[in-house]
Length: 269
Image 1: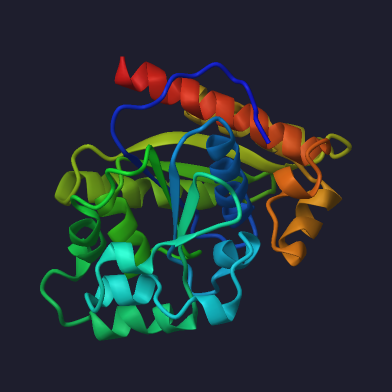
Image 2: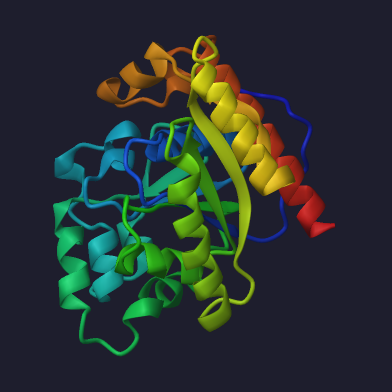
C-alpha cells in the first residue's frame, strides 16, 4: 500500500507518546493506524507498546507466543532495546511488544532511583533506524506513561467526542506541564485528535466545538468517525488501513497522517 501525501523524509527520529488516561478513546487504534499510514509513505516507524493489555501488539498481528522479549524486559534492563524489536507484516513498521508482565514493572521499579528515566535511557542511541517512534501509553498517568513523557519529544492526545472529554484532557495537560517543568523541558502537545465522532449526534459537534475553542490550532482538522470497520480490524490482527482501506475510518487516518507530517515539518522549519 502506498499513500502519496507529499511530505519529505524526516532527518532524525521523532518520539511521540500517544496518551489519554481515559480508556476507550481510540488511543491504541490511533497508534496502529497512524503508524501504518506513516510507514505507507516510506517513513521508518517503531511502535513501542507500553500498555500491559498489549492491544497494539495484537492489533499489529503479533500473537502472545511472539512476545517473549518485550517492553517489560527493556524497562527492567534485562535486554537492550534492539533485542525486543520485532518486525510486523507491514514494511517499514517495527514493534516492541507488550504483555501482562509489563504490569509488574511499576512495582519492580518503585524503589529504583532512575525509575522515571528507564525508557529514555533504553532508547538513547538506539533509534537511528527510525523516523518516528510512537509510544502507546496505558490508560493511566502512572510510571509507564511518565516514562514515555520523559522520553518523548511530544504527546498526541486522542480525545473521544463525549461529555466529559475536556475535563479529562485538562488533567492530562497539567501532568504534561509538570513533566515539562521537572524532567523534559522540550515536551509539548503535538496535537489533539477527535475520535469516535458521530455526525448524527449533536453532542459530537458540541464537544468538538468546545475542544477547538479551548485548544485552538492544537486540535487537528481531521476527525476520526465512529466506524464499524475500525472496530472490527483488531480482531483480525490488522490495522483498518489494511483491513478495509476504502472505509471512512481508514480515509480519516490517512488524512490524519498527512496533518501530523505537515505539523512536524512546520515544527522543524
